[in-house]
Amino acid sequence: MRVVIAGAGSVGRSIARELLSHDHEVTIIDKNPSAMRVSQVPEAEWVLADACELPALEASELEQADVVVGATGDDKVNLVFSLLGKTEFGVPRTVARVNNPKNEWMFDQSWGVDVAVSTPRIMTAMVEEAVAVGDLVKIFSFSHSAADILELTLPADSRVAGTRVGQVVWPADVTLATIVRDGRPLAPSPDDTLEAGDELLLVAGADADTDALQKLLVPKG
Image 1: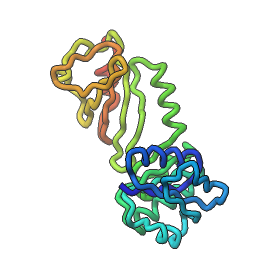
Image 2: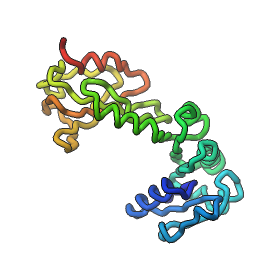
Image 3: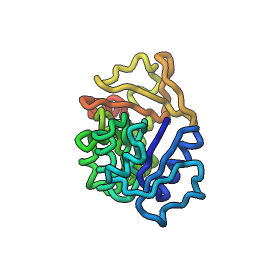
Image 4: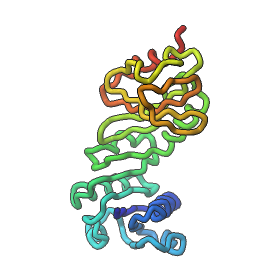
């Protein structure tokens, strides 16, 4: 897979190293000469150019990319890079970093963004997940499909504790994706029994009734 990353900062370099370790082809674009720390990711192809300029993207052969990643610290750059990648070069998948949560509403299909990654929101979700038992926490949102990944730690007196997965009537547009038990992810089968303390990862579509889901999983009281 060929991935082109806009932004040679710590985030862009970290993404590049991870992708390279999985044998992907990576190009990093940045207009700042001081960001060209080639020795830190020598396996990547480095391009000193403005990721918002068409000639630079043409020279980088963006049309051959399978994925582009807007990883700069500037939301405007990440948006424009995603839009150009999607509309001008037909890149199949675009991922954009959101630096300011106030800008999240723009990171959608109208700007060519398939997946928006908001570090502040993810960190907030992780904090909430660490302290909340019995509360649904939104971990991630897919802007392309409007689906959400939700997490809930099952309390001891949950309505479904001790119930087999196949017996649970989940709300429409909700799917149980994973059970994390004792630090290990489990692919749920109909015969698996839900236990107190299980971390449930659920995928909820745009029309899912999260209130009904919360009522299903919360204590019986």
